[in-house]
Amino acid sequence: MKLSLSVLDLSPVGRDTTPSQAIRDSIALAQHADRLGFTRYWFAEHHNMANIATSAPEVLIAHAAAVTSRIRLGAGGIMVPNHAPLHVVETFRTLEALAPGRIDLGLGRAPGTDPVASAALRRTDAEVNSQLAELLAFEHGRFPASHPFAKIAPMPSDVAAGQLWMLGSTLAGATIAADIGVPYAFAGHFSFVHAADALRHYRNSYTPSRAHPTPHAMLALTCVCAPTDAEAERLATPLRLAIVRNRTGRRGPIPTVEEALATTLTPDEQAIADEFFAGAVIGAPATVADRLRALAHDLGADELMLSTLLPSLDDRRRSLELVAAALA
Image 1 (cartoon, rainbow, N blue to C red):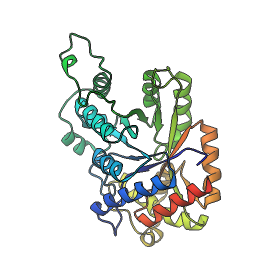
Image 2: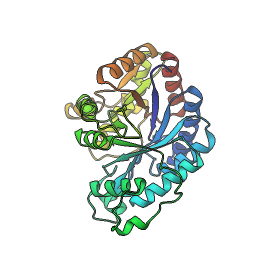
Image 3: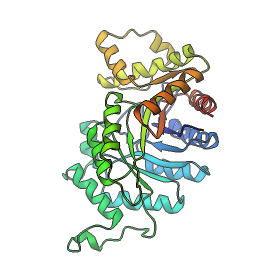
């Protein structure tokens, strides 16, 4: 593909899809993306969400790496507040040892869940930026000699924890990525309104690093592609309803197309859906290809990552096939 395209997977759970089946479908889709030529395939980390099953991205990465041959596998991302920094480094070094040159470690500063589940996951009161700094110190061996952790050698010690990425949906993540000189992925699939400012700030503030002398920006987008514009809009209808229900405390599996079409949103609910889908790319192959090219050009994105949050594996396979063919 001439435009570098990747996939973000959240293992969507629909009315007719069990969470365990959603996990297995994600592995099948990763294999499909590998064959289609996508650059990388990332699994998100979310907890306590009835329509998203990706609670353990590192496990999914390991399995996907074993059944694919070329595509990069990664976390989009590992949510720093939820994990011990040393464990993250050792986990991703282990993944890199098993799949050399194919592992990405995307780091996010949000918990990826609600406050109650966040409290259940956390076992420290450390501030998130302190945890991030500790993780980077473990990875790069940069603890001061007097620090007690300086004596710890994360294993396996002869590999890196994959390629480090910083994730974000505001200027804060862009600032950190620029300061430490790593690639940056912006979460435009749910927070598109800040995308242009964040990507511009990242590029303008970038501090070159030895591993990454130039900035590399990736933009994540919601994308649904079908043979016609009308069919794509029809398939996306349940996502709008699912987002509204999730953000108004009515969590559940992604509804069916029929249920979504039979539901009328209130003006407030429509505003919620419109905000979430502000940067969504939905349509026939030509429509999608033109829009993706324009977004990459206008926002200065080196790479686009597509989130196709459809519960049907067949619909997601077809969406990726159509996008890949349209941009070949």
